[in-house]
Image 1 (cartoon, rainbow over the protein chains, first blue to last red):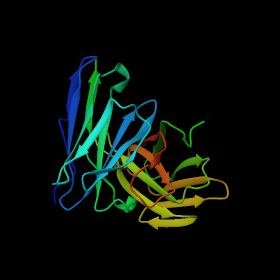
Image 2 (image 1 turned 135 degrees about the vertical axis):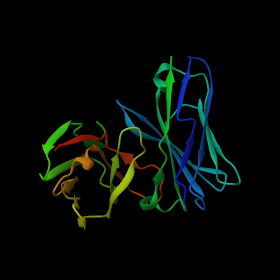
Image 3 (image 1 turned 45 degrees about the vertical axis):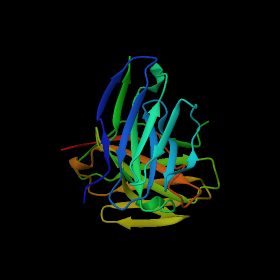
Length: 114
Length: 112
């Protein structure tokens, strides 16, 4: 069974640009969460989607947005990139939202903003 | 002050040693406690999951939760070089997968 797939693995952008990251959950998983990981702040929750609906959102500015498609695949978008957005963006999937013990992470997308 | 505090290390121990990793937290509402292992350039993988207080053992790994002291620990027995990784504690008040609060991670190195 394939794991959580995130594309691209690496991305280099400049300030002011926008970026879209993609996540394909494990087959059969319907819940997708996004996290930002930086050396200074660690792992921080961005948002969670289930059945194409955003269930929860973390404390990030509106420049960070996401969506989920009917096949459970998810994308997140960051507009007007800032240097501080450089981070590893991790996607995690689970069967249902109420299963935090069965949360599987992808390898992440490493975003560098120059 | 962060909700979850974790010593970033790095921690270096010889192969075969017992490793003790710890986290403290401030939110008494936390009910679900987890330990994740993260290898370089990989996403975190769940090692241990505990609900409320007590101990849980899985092979060489033991997780302890002391809610009265707001303190959790992970012990690794007979440590192996393959255990070298960053270990993240995590916790949440909810059974939901969302809004899990992670510690900053402890970088562990096992010397052969």
